[in-house]
Length: 245
Image 1 (cartoon, rainbow, N blue to C red):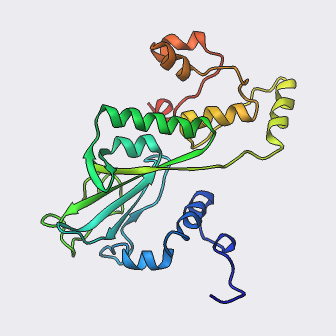
Image 2 (tube, rainbow, N blue to C red):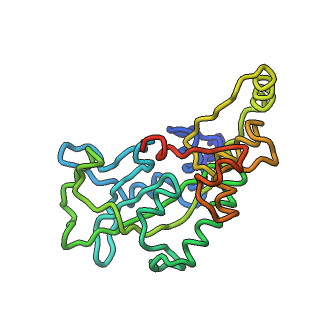
Image 3 (spheres, rainbow, N blue to C red):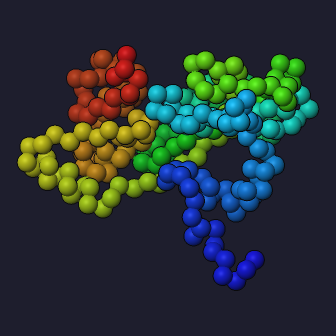
């Protein structure tokens, strides 16, 4: 390596904060350019790449890559909101094998996801799906132009893991929120993070008091419905899916 070469953490990366963090996390494990060259993204008929960027409507990003196994030449990789990726998965990757998701793994997923979320960490879920060669040969023409009109399966994925990132609020935010409250201004936070993470960040920036429990927490602790928990809670986190219903 050249003496004036920058360390991998100092090298510029294209993308938002989450994408940049993923790139810099992976680089010391395996050179990302070499890895991308080994598993290239498939091309569609119009020469565009077979991928779907992240959008808050479908809550995941998707790429289809050339990955050769005994029975497959194409693999779909997705990453995004943990609950969404988990919902699309029927198996989980454990010790190098894909095993069916059962109640044990559902409990483990919820436990780990909550640990990360309670720390105010941004959590991403990852999964993959090797497409059978007899239905999706190497020259198969994928359609990734529209998520509602694609020509490949979007269920039965193998969940491969969770990734958490620390994205702390700016130092001035907690004090600014307190000033707003003193002036009688109600502060509402809108975020793309999952509810458990959103609640943790809201406490960090003084939107919630430290000892205030959300509707979701009370419902879970007391085993009651969200409707019954509303009158018992001092704070609420509303998932975007409920707003759009």
